[in-house]
Structure formats: structure tokens, C-alpha cells
Length: 330
Ligand code: AOF
Ligand code: ZN
Image (tube, rainbow, N blue to C red):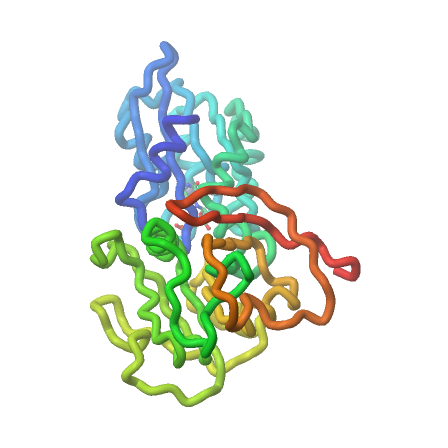
């Protein structure tokens, strides 16, 4: 299964909005005789690629796959059928397919006389497809909020203009994270004050291969000269003239966005927290006192507890990761 998980995250994978899936075919003598992974939506599924690689050696083998094999005909045919036709005698999978259309493959395999074991390293497989799984289960994108604040909780100095808060390592971390999400979101005020590009860049400032959709939300009229609207080879950013967090997420999902990073400002972040639509908190704390200036979040009508999931030192800064604890009324 670890071999299959490693295949699922190979760098050539651009599956979104599909899940990332890896598969190995293991012969009766315990050797891997075929490897395959899902490379992009519309291309063959992992099992089909692994079976093709194994050829005749697939007969009587065990297929080890990171997601329960699908039993539907979508852009490609059902993997259950491919496994049955290849003469595979056992299937071991990690995560159950939570979708209505593709799920239920395990039962079909059992019905065809194939031995099936599910749930092996399921947690690790789910992390690989965290956003996809979240969308299938909740019907909305996975939302991370990120801020960079000083020890006294401020995101800008006196006057509120753009201020350097965190160090270079944190900025590289955020650049990498942007390349892993489908969309980066900011409020209209942040865009007019900070004029951020919001592209995913490496430490030399070069664009990373995967770029998120850049989105500014709010009804305010914005200058078309802002960096977010510049087409840097990955398409220009867009404006969503909407304030309601739930409606914003619906519009994004309609554009196949499964994972969103909200980078500010304080009003937008507070609105998503208050709406209970935040799945991950990424709080960078920089070792300085700014002394004056706006704080990281606009006031909330009630306090909210956070469960810390990790604390990491990134260069000279501290990253606190957490999740919102359920509000008493949620
Ligand atoms: C598998 N193996 O490698 C993948 C699966 O549009 P399609 O036909 O590509 O189907 C996409 C759905 O199939 C996706 O939502 C998920 O439920 C399943 N993906 N299943 O057996 C794979 N990528
Ligand atoms: Zn399939």
C-alpha cells in the first residue's frame, strides 16, 4: 500500500477535480508486477494503468489500490470490470470511495468472487485527497485561513499600509501552499491596500508550475491595474461580487475549486470563521511587536475556541495550525 500511496502523489499528477489514486499489482510470489496511477481527469484510472503494465501477470494477482475501485462509467470505464476481466483474485484498498456514482465497487468485486480487504492505511490515503474527500462528504470546498501577524496580533503597522511581517522562509512556505490549492481568496480592501500578486512562487520568485485561481471578493470597484488582475501566464485573477461566505464557496465549487486558501483581510477571515466555514487555521506569528496597526481579525460576535493540531518553526517565525472547535450552537 505504501508503494501505491507513493504512486498517487507523483509530481506528474494533475487530477483535480478527480482524486489522486495509485495502484500496484502483486503476483502470487509477492512481487510487484505492475504499477499505475491516475494522472489527470479523463485519463485511465490507476487500476487500469497498473493492469496494463502487468499484462498476463495480473491473472491470479492481488491489486493494491489507494481508493476503492469505481464501478461506474464516467469519463472512463468501471475499474471493477477491468479487475474482473484481468483475473485479479484479491483486491486490497485504502479509502472507501465516498461518492454516490463511483462508490460500492467493493461489493461488486465480492459478488464476482474476488477477495476484498478495505481500510488499509485509509487515513494516509484520505490525507492525499483531503480536499476532494471533503467536497464529497460536505458538498463544499475545504477552506484554510492564513494570516501573518506580529506577537502583538497586528497584520500591519500604524497607518495600515503593506508591512513585512514574516521572514523569507514563511513566504516560501506560503508560495508552495498556494500551488497546492485550487484558489486563493482575499477581500477587496486587502487588494487595494496591499496590491498582492497572490501567485505561487519559489524562493527565487519564479512561478511554480501549479498556479491557483486568484480571487478577490467584494463589490467594491477595483482598478484593473492591480497585480491580481495581471495575466502572468496563468490567466488573470477574478472578482466575485459577493460577501456571503456560503455563496462564495458555492460559486467557487461551480468552478471546480475544491480547496481554498483565504489570505485576508481581517474582515473576510472573520466572516468565514463566524459562518463556521473554516476547516484549517494557519497562523504565522512573527517575532516582533508592531506596536500599532490593525489586528488579524475583525471582531466576532462571540468567542470561538480553536484546537491546535501542530506548531512548527518556519525560519524565524512560528506557524500554529489548528481547526475551529464547534461553537456551542453549531
Ligand atoms: C478508481 N480509480 O484511479 C480513480 C477513481 O470521471 P471519471 O470516470 O474519471 O471518474 C471519476 C470518479 O472515479 C471520481 O470522482 C472517483 O469517485 C473515482 N476515481 N476511481 O477506481 C482511480 N481516479
Ligand atoms: Zn476507476
